[in-house]
Length: 357
Image (cartoon, rainbow, N blue to C red):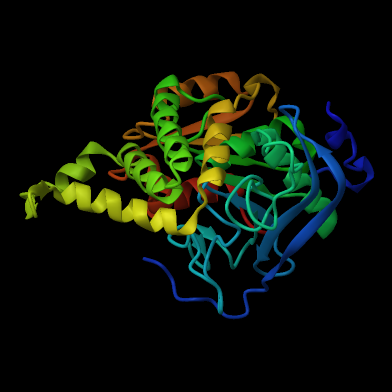
């Protein structure tokens, strides 16, 4: 166990027993936790003056569920009055599949990301000036969550609900800190990454690095995200949406799917930093946990059309986990089905979480 994990006080732990309109009076608390001193990371790096940006929304007396998403997700999970659009508002919120009337929803900005937690660039950067930003593990993200729970005085989590990278973090948390959480719900994430998914992301990272070296990091990020979008969604969706004729654009033709991919890439590049995307993309491919050591009851959701996380990998994960239930769903949205399939996820969440009492 590294030194930073040993620093978490054991005494603070306790054993467990369509997009909506903004919601007023949702009991929102949010802030930034400053972590003093130097923190040791799983892959050997160190950070000083680390900051963790967090958000907790829902009834004050309700059980707490931590909701975590992909590497572009933020602490704003669902929309409340006066807040920006939440990244998971189709699935999480009052009367949604994860009901914010019944549970308090906790989340945080990822370490190494583009938002307000410590990352590779901006005021939150915590690496030594003479060293590059360190490699980040899903175990490091799990440790951030433990630090948050201690700081917020939360005794335990009813569950962690994680999609994509968030599911990887949930598994890492379940291995390291089982006494803190009652259930894991993991959507589109396995105990290790598939080499084909790593192949796609490696090309994306090479595009971004090359663009940064040329002084055009934002353009490179747009290209990489456009490529990524073609792996997130299914061939069935693209066939249904983009089978139209190309349009002439000057001396060349522009295809409908091309317009979509680069529009999404441009929007992403406006909101994220190349260095942060490189950091968290690599963190996905470094992810590997020991499923045989995760004794927290785990619900796994696999999507048949998911190109990034094949069902075979999730069936293997379910076989290795001591206590697991696998649900297989179908979604035209592919890997992004975890963001969209509210109706299919509702019953799965209800079965896993039980009543809020």
